[in-house]
Each structure stands twice: as structure tokens, then as C-alpha cells.
Amino acid sequence: MALEWVVLGYAAAAEAIMLLLITLPVLGALRKGLIAVVRSALKPMLSIVPFCLFLLMDIYWKYETRPTCDQEHACTPTEHLRHQKSIMKSQRNALLIASALVLYWLLFAVTNLVVKVEQLNQRIEKLKRED
Image (cartoon, rainbow, N blue to C red):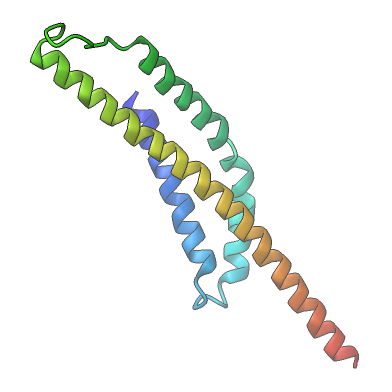
């Protein structure tokens, strides 16, 4: 199961890097190429959404089937520690899922905004040339 989380972490990191590169004002000359690359990568990266939903269902299933240590002497200290580690891992993984989904949404929205701004700039230049 660890491989799935590594893949999701790399996907979230790739989304963050692409978002950072698109929003940097310094890369004016490379912006068109970056936007083309990001726009072509957005459709395959959409597979992150069902993948995150699958992983979220996995967290929920683990939560529902975990052993409980309700009474004070029901669990050994080792079982109690394992239970606490499991809860911490689930919280970390839920945070990773949320960040991957938010980063994908931000990347999609920012890419569309940058494309619209460039189209509007082209229209403004065309109108200036006509006048």
C-alpha cells in the first residue's frame, strides 16, 4: 500500500511544481511552452481524482475495521501504540489526498486563467494595430 501513497505524493509534487512555474512572472519567454505542456498534462492527471477517492475509501475501510481499545486494560501497550500510529498515518494520508485534489483544482483554474489572459492580450494588440 505504500507505493500508492508515494505515487500520490509525486503527483502532488508535480502539480505544485507546474503551478509554481506557471505563476512565476520571470519566465515570460517560456510561458507559452509551459502552458502547452501543462494543458496537455491536465487530462491524464485527472486520473488523480478517482485515485484519491479510492484511497479515501481505503482509509475509511481501515477506520471501520480497526481494533478498538475502549477499555483501559483491553489492549496491550504495543497494540495501543500500533493503534495510535495507524490513526496518525490515516490523518497524514487524508491530508495528502486533500492537497493533491486542491493542487489539481488550482492548476486547472490557473491554467485556464492564464490562457484567457493571453487571449485577451492578443485581442488588445490586434485592436491596437487596427487603430
